[in-house]
Structures are given as C-alpha cells and as structure tokens.
Image 1 (cartoon, helix red, strand yellow):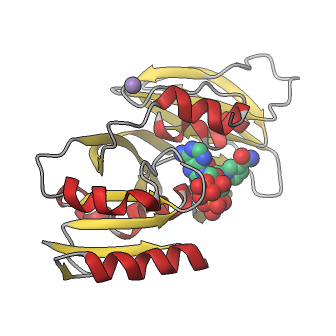
Image 2 (cartoon, helix red, strand yellow):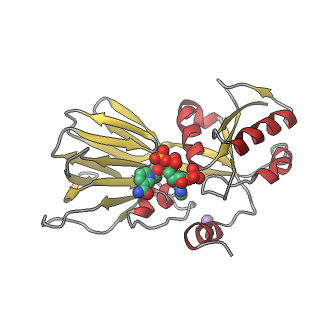
Image 3 (cartoon, protein in one colour):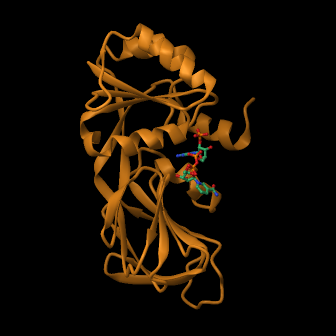
Length: 253
Ligand code: NAP
Ligand code: MN
C-alpha cells in the first residue's frame, strides 16, 4: 500500500504523524498515494481533498481528528492501532458528494460549499434552478453547500443540517437585504440532479470554494452542481451523526 499524510501544523498532529509513520507497514508516496491520512480538523480534510482532487476516485481518506471529533474526521488519535487493523479488513466507506463549479475560465471542486460574494460591495444576482429564474437577491452573498458542508458556513447562515446519507444541494443567502420584491428568504434544498446558476449584476465578484478564494472579473454566470466525482472516507461504524451534532452545537455531557 502507498500512503501519504497531511497534518495540521500543531504539536499533537505532528506527533501523531510521527507515531503513524513509525507503525504503518506501507510505502510513503506523496504523489500517488492509495490512502491519505488527514491529521487535524475538518479544515485539514478540506486541504487533503483539494490537494488530491485529481485522483479522488483512486484514494481512500482516513481522517483523524486531533481535538474534538469533527464532521469529516471520524477517528480519534487513540484509535490509531484500530485504524491500521481496520485498513487490513474489508472496511466500510463513506462516499461523500462534492460540488463542481464553473465561472468563466475557472472550474473546480468543493467539499463544503461554494460562496459567491460581492467583494466589498453588495452582491446583486439572479439565481436560476436549471433554466428557471427563481429569485433576484441582494446581500452579502450566496452559499451553495453539500450535505457534509451543511454544518459549516451553511449552518452559520441559518441553513439546515443535512444527513450525510442524503444526496442533495442547499442554497442559503448571507444577510439578504429585503427591499427587493423577488427575494427568497429561506434556504432551498434540491436533489442532486439540479444545477444552481448565479448571474451576478456585478461582474466583478468573489468566489470561495472551501478554503480557496478566487477574484472573478467580468463573469456573467456561475454554475454549481453536485459533481459526478465523490470523496471516499474510511468509515467509523461507532460514530453516530446525531451525537456529533449534539456535541458540536449543544455541548458535551
Ligand atoms: P477553517 O479553519 O478551515 O474552518 C473554519 C472552521 O470550520 C473550523 O473550525 C473547521 O473545523 C470548521 N469546519 C470546516 N468544515 C466543517 C464542516 N463540514 N462541518 C463543521 N465544521 C466545519 O477556516 P477556513 O480556511 O476559512 O475554512 C473554510 C471553511 O470555513 C469554509 O469551507 C466554510 O465552511 C467555513 N466558513 C465559515 C464562516 C462562518 O461560519 N461564518 C465564514 C467563512 C468560512 P476544524 O477546527 O475541525 O478544522
Ligand atoms: Mn445517516
């Protein structure tokens, strides 16, 4: 087996990386790994997905959280021996949706969300679902997220938390300014086969795809939909989604 490790640059993550590399019976291959260990938080996972976006169909991501359990990070450092044993079995995986976006000459993938904003100005845009114009909105921005991304920026914008087993795409508005007639104030959740098309009135706007920020110049149309590509994660059978929501947003016992 060929593997690579991506870790957060803190003491605990660096030390776990060293422990892992000392224990694992496999070859380190940063360029063409079969298994990618992400050690850190959900943010570290976003970096791993972005780094290996071109070979996501071939890799298995093993996400270990230093600190509290995250939403992608299903394993804890103390479970390292169990993880290495699990990798030798007929393990189960979580296959998570990604978004694909296209804006002028830019295109790419996002694991959490695509966020379109007006830079320092208000964003004004028409929003289409496939061929149908559904709203004209003004505000800080428009967030389109995956189910796994629903607990990130989407949640802060008042969007719904979506079970990772549901294939869907959600649109939420950031601080919509309510003097426009055709404004949709609440989130929209669509099945995976639909596409959101944003036609900004300000042709110079900003697009964020997870941790990547792109300045768009003279772009008339931004298209976002669920990609045919997915990201494959080693599954922790003992991890309960409802418990993670409770621990994160309500607090631990
Ligand atoms: P980051 O440190 O990578 O992420 C910011 C925080 O979001 C971290 O605490 C991270 O958890 C958490 N997070 C990431 N993905 C998550 C998920 N799917 N569910 C729950 N929590 C999640 O900072 P960044 O470089 O700016 O990262 C970009 C992400 O930040 C974006 O994808 C966006 O979702 C989020 N964001 C949120 C807001 C907001 O809430 N107002 C504004 C901008 C961006 P860990 O500590 O485990 O890494
Ligand atoms: Mn479920």
